[in-house]
Image 1 (cartoon, rainbow, N blue to C red):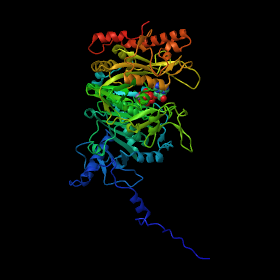
Image 2 (image 1 turned 30 degrees about the vertical axis):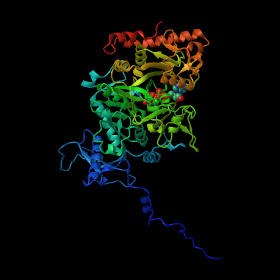
Image 3 (image 1 turned 45 degrees about the vertical axis):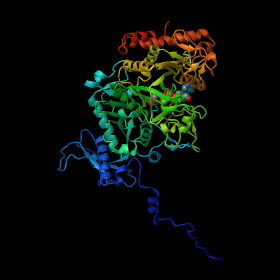
Image 4 (image 1 turned 180 degrees about the vertical axis):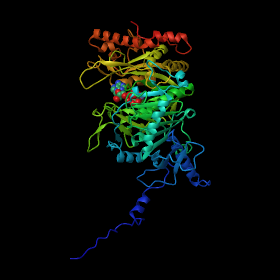
Length: 635
Ligand SMILES: Nc1ncnc2c1ncn2[C@@H]1O[C@H](COP(=O)(O)OP(=O)(O)OP(=O)(O)O)[C@@H](O)[C@H]1O
Ligand SMILES: O=C([O-])CC(=O)C(=O)O
Ligand SMILES: [Ca+2]
Ligand SMILES: [Mn+2]
């Protein structure tokens, strides 16, 4: 028998002598946006190194404690990998730094904080999977994450600094989302968040933009502890090009997201372990004690609701899309009423799904991504959203099969508020840049679980304003334990949780813009028909889409109308593709008395809610104010 030696040399040899060398061949030195590329072949020697230093110094300055002399020592890169020690910065708080050894030096000033700066989605996946429990790649390539104890926003834990300026400018008191805190308390919480973040081995920093309108772009920096948060904001804010990042400079606004690290209950104004604090003068936001990523998105939205009206620009909690002929539609509505679902329309260009600005030049999206509800998501009904859930997308709090990693979108085990956050370009017909001309249609969405609002009605300007200020929807609280009474929610401007000024300020701007542009208002009920929740059923998405199509095409504008009782809404008598009997909700109720009773009940709720607005003037026009007051239910 012949002795055989096994030679492993049947194919061409690799160009490496060692495994490490082989690994180094694998990764090209970079054109990733976390390293400026422009300076590479510029003659000005050391310019890239200088820029890197500046960038790190800016980050160290952001992370500086307000009570110590210097910012933390920061260094770029993952501590577990080889850190780039040529790029170390330590920003000084004071112009004249002590040169003598400081006897008060503490351990915190000796340690390095590693900065993971504008990482790519791939890098963030690896960080999340390696370091954050509950992070998994799903079968479609999305990153499944858990947001921890909070699976929704905590509006009662939001605080806004009340100082000389904001005490006059902002809306305070009953009904307002702005619960006050003082400057000193803000600084206590800021210090708490900054110290927590700097005590970590590494923090994530995102430098990004808000608002696609180039004249009103806002630079934001987000400092966070989790790759989940960094990837979420990567998707939701506008992503800078490498050149834009190189010239980023100082941010206009900074978020310190300490995530799970709680606030201190002994701190004044704190009523729980969670605090979301906005300081407009300092241009900063602090998040303590919640990992729900939506707080960052909606915190920035609040900021825009302050900054934009100062520039005569209206900020809107709305979706927005545009037809082939350039006709723009806005979709207002509270959470879960269909902004994302209905603005994502295969036959139209998507400008954005949730937050917009309306200026003298038209509309612009504030964000760079979408945040879709995914409970009961189906490929058939919402194909574009389904297909957007792929590599790069953050999937929050969904349940998946442990082996195949197929997501079960019907599973509410973690929460009903399961979400997908993806870059807007994941929708095939996204309009990039996300801007458009003045809106032609303004669609107010209400998910009416009482089942008495018509599937569609045409509104005059006063009615549009009445319903905009009311901001109605009705959802069903707990779906698990059998039938529950629907509860009406009224949220001024369809986003009372995010507005900073009195609702009538936004309403006046909307009225003026709609009047000037001749936009038509519509009220669309995406909720119940044939009875309230429990006896009726939710209006088929396919019907709602048909209605929306007919608004876009102009078909509905020219339909025949009749007026409803109580709410005085103009409803079409027929519409192609829709069974005519559903257009008037009364027809769909078997028990007409119950219908009438429920209708009056809802009318009463509207009336009660509007009482607080009765003493306010809307815009300069007295007539409009009176017309708006008269545009409510009549009985
Ligand atoms: N007739 C209908 N019209 C619109 N949406 C419907 C309808 N029937 C069921 N739905 C479901 O209602 C949900 C609407 O949620 P969507 O994400 O569009 O809310 P949203 O207004 O964007 O809220 P948020 O501001 O919280 O993001 C989706 O899950 C959608 O599938
Ligand atoms: O902020 C969130 O959690 C989701 C959202 O869009 C809303 O509630 O309007
Ligand atoms: Ca949405
Ligand atoms: Mn929203």
